Image 1: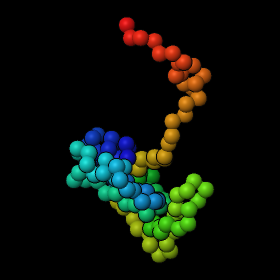
Image 2 (image 1 turned 180 degrees about the horizontal axis):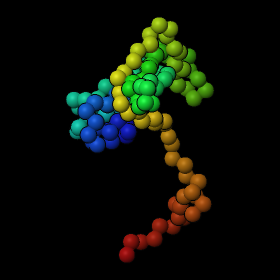
Image 3 (image 1 turned 90 degrees about the horizontal axis):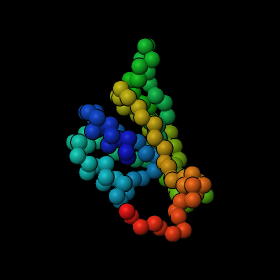
Image 4 (image 1 turned 135 degrees about the vertical axis):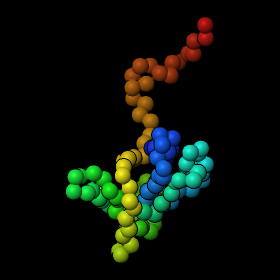
Length: 123
């Protein structure tokens, strides 16, 4: 989400957000509702990027994707994407930004004693 919004704010004429599962709720609305992305963002959920296509000079010219359906739940509790044969499609693009889900790693903060056991007053 952040990468698509940043790309649009940096001047991208069009952005595509490709996601293997289904975007719902606030996440989906945040990309469609951001200034600079309303007219040019495509949210392609239940799509799996398979291969970056390049021209003879190795410049990016597209991305090949495959549609998926959601199957049974995996260990994380999310429905597992299942590839649908014969549903390949290509998008013409000139830049690909790879982005993965993330969660906060608190180890550094904990090693520094954060949060403190007692909050100091502001000076």
